[in-house]
Image (cartoon, rainbow, N blue to C red):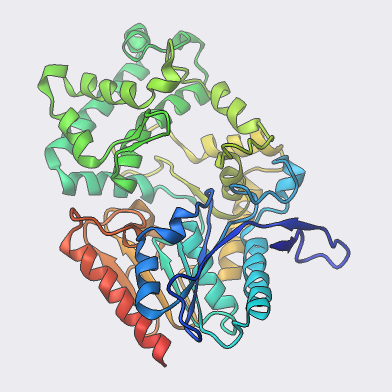
Amino acid sequence: FRQKLDHFSKISSRLWPQRYFINDAFYKPGGPVFLRIGGSRTVYESWISINNTWVTYAERVGALLLLLEHRFYGHSQPTGDLSTPSLHYLSSRQALADIANFRTQIAEKMGLTENKWVAFGCSYAGSLAVWSRIKHPELFAAAVGSSAPIKAKANFYEYLEVVQRSLATHNRKCFQAVKEAFGEVRKMLRSRKYHSKLEYDFRLCKPMKFYSAMDKAFFLELLVFPLKSAVQNNRNKKNYKGEQLSFSMDELCVMMADISLGSPYYRYIRITHLLFKHEYSRCFPAHYREKLEVLLDSSIDHHNPTTDRQLFYQSCTEFGFFQTTDSKKQTFTGLPLSYFVQQCSDLFGPKFNHDSLNTGVISTNAYYGGLNVTGSKIIFPNGSFDPWHALGITKGISKDLPAVFIKGAVHCADMYEQKNTDSAELIQAREKIFRILQKWLKQ
C-alpha cells in the first residue's frame, strides 16, 4: 500500500510501501471489516489465517480480515534505515494517520465504504486500535484494545510491582525463592569481596572491578528479564534455532524449587544460563557496551528485522514505559529512571534527555487523553497477571466503554488461539468480547 512518509507536512509528498495482508475466506458481502493493527513487531500471514481469536470472530460474523504492518517495524520500512533523522518519522500519530489513510483508500478501492470497520490490536497496537476509534469515529464503528497501555508514563515502576504480585499469587514459595536469590546477588554486588564469586558463578566476560554504574544496571536488567518474560507472556518460547527465549511461570518455578541445584541463588543462575546460552558462547557479556552496540546499529536486516531500536526510540520520545525499580514495594533494585534516560542520550543524541522525555509523555497524554477515555464502542480486555494492565483500563467506564478484566490471564491472552489449557475465565472472556461486538455490529 502506497503510504505518505509525513502526513503532517504540506511540502513533502514522499511515499513508501506499507505491507498488509488480506483474508476473505469468511467474508459475506456487506459484512464487517476487521482491521488488525500491527504494533512494534513484524507481522506474519499466520496472524490472519490460523485460529487466533479475532479470526474465529470473523468466521462467526462473515467479516473480511485485514492486517496492517506498523511503519518502521518488520518489512514496512519508509526510509531504508533506522538512523535518528529517519526515526523522526516514527510516531504513534504518524501511525494513526497511516491507519486512517489505509482504511479510507482500501474502502474506496474495494467497495467497503458502507461496511462497519472494527479495529483490533494487542499491547501498543491495542492502544492504536483504541485511539483510532477515539480520533476517527467516522472510520471505525468499534475497537478492541487488548492489554493496551492507554496512559504514557516515564517511570513505569508499577510494572515490576505487578511482576512480583503475579508470581506470588501464582506460586508463593517460588516467589520467596526468587526474592532470596535476588537478595543474595544484591548483597554480593555491594561488597567487593564477593565480586570474584559473582564473576565465576555467572561466567562474566570482564572483571567486576571494571564495571561502571551502567554495566551493573545492565547486569541487573538481564537478571530480571527471565521473570518479566515468564510473568508477562507465560509461554515456553524457542527461536528458529531451538534456543530457549523464555519460560512459562510453571517451568521457572519448577527450577526454583529444584534443591538438587543448590540454594535459590544457584537455581536462578541455572535459569539465566539456560536463557542466555546462545549469547553466552564462552562467557556472559553483561556489560552496557554490548547493549549499546546492538541498539546503535541503524541498518535493517531484511531477513530478520529487529525492533528494539525503534521501540526504544518511541519510549524516549512518546511513552516512557521504562520498567524501573524506583518504588519501595519491590524486591528488585538498581534500575533507576536515569539508567534508561542515559540510554536515550547514548542512542539518539544529547537532545534526548529527561526534559524531552517528560515533554513527550505529557504531550502524548494530552493528545490522546490518557486514562480519561471518551467516545464509545471500545472494549478493553486485560489480564490480572499482565504487568501492562497497570496503565490500562481495568474497570468499565460506561456501557459503551466496557472493560473485560481476566483473572490470572497474561499479556494479550484473549487474542491468542484457544488451547485446552486455557482457564474457564479466559474462555468466558473471549465469548463476552464477541457478544458485545456482535451486539454493536447489529445496531
